[in-house]
Image 1 (cartoon, rainbow, N blue to C red):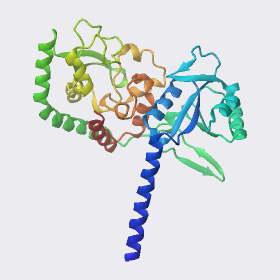
Image 2: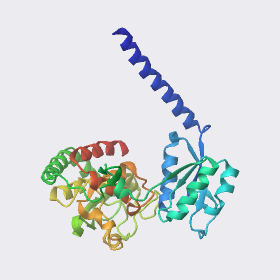
Image 3: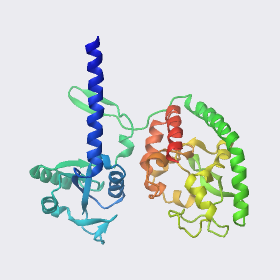
Image 4: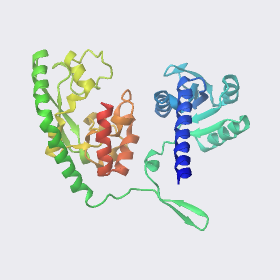
Length: 341
């Protein structure tokens, strides 16, 4: 018994020790693997951002390759554009590339196969960032007919009790949050009125479930004369934002009035963020799938995504939530939202 106990203790301790040593070595950047990204679109930029956000994965992006050969700039996201797909061999040898990430959803099968073969010849690891996020965002059922694998695609049905339980979860949660936040909200409203002319609450038409329009509430963070349906501010120095509004946006306190939308049944605590009508009008048919559920105050985009990309460029988080929604996932997102804020 003592031997088994010491064995478990020492094995666990050694694993933790070496894991931390490896993580520290990766964070130092001295052992980063030189990587090349094929693609110049949103998927490629998002991949670069994720690698930069997580240095512990141990990659150093040396640059990009243009999959089409018509990219006008010489750099992308402060990284050089090193050529086209035809330049792969020369670029890989010049920069000592050890891994290639293909983030070009429109790349054809023939060109993809030629890339695989070229990487195999060079001894380079080859990875693909798939664009089929709606397929891969859940445990996809797999059946076998003899030795032939069959993957089941399509929508997954939620439990019949999910909707009423979700509504009860939203009501109880909103009321529990509203009670302690009431004094803070009153103080914020008073400060907004004192620091800039105009109402404390900002009302804006947004698109809800199944395309229904509703008025979403927020604390006003911009000057009253600002255009209400313009693109949202992405920088703190935006001239439309009031000094006090900048603090409200940074702390996400400006979203608290949306608890009233939750109580009214127009929104949920957790779900895809509601978009403005002019953005929804430009949706493709597959993008409109995010309107199948109620919009939420918070969601996966807030805790996992990059806010320097607009919501309509982060739809994979919405599709993951729609396919995997449950009360347990909602509770997890709410808890992690507190940490993210």
